[in-house]
Length: 307
Image (tube, rainbow, N blue to C red; front, side, top):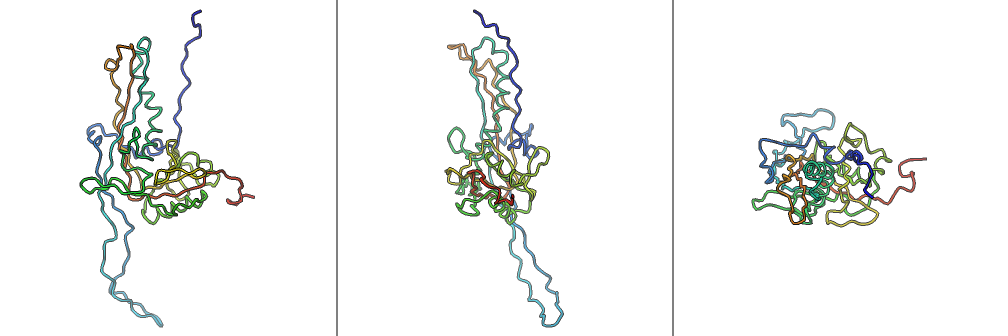
């Protein structure tokens, strides 16, 4: 008997909020006139918190107070460093028989890319691996500096601000923000795997601001479904998750490219390969810190002052 079921539209798809691409939409650059960023980019970061001094003519009066000594000579208080970032591509492929699929193959591939690219970008930013090979620099889970052939910094080593100690979520986020504040007098980003989101919410560490979360200190929080939770050495231990903090990132991406359906036919199988892809380059400003936080579940509210 022929299938009499009615063909209807699939359920509507809504991307998860508060991920990397949705949170940092204002930091995403999609230049249409110059796509050479697809070969990677070089940029300069100005890092440091400056210094203070005083005028040599200053005098101090009062009982028992002597004039201060001459101020020391000024020395470099900030650094100007060239950094590089390398590209990677996210793609989707749908293989389907040509009859009934030909007319919608390209649209289906582009929709598939829109559904998964956020997850894949987060995964690659965390590990640096594309198709199992570490080719994306810089990435979060890294414990060694990498330079290119010209001595430009491609990868910074994450500074483990409390070593390998496992902290509760309040101590861990506090340690990251303190490290950021002593590195960077600007808004930073806390990169958090989604399994820690309930912990942050329970501890009142998430402040909603439109399409993004911030900490009470004002740093941006990205909740990444693709964030693997691994440490700078690439390992993951049960009961704990690593969280990273960086200076503000930028995200370059080009327009989604869809392979024309006429170029992707497997004539031997009468199959269409619907392929869409997009190139990304991501870098960040100055700082790169890591903290290991307990993810074993909250068994009591006492640690956060609950009665």
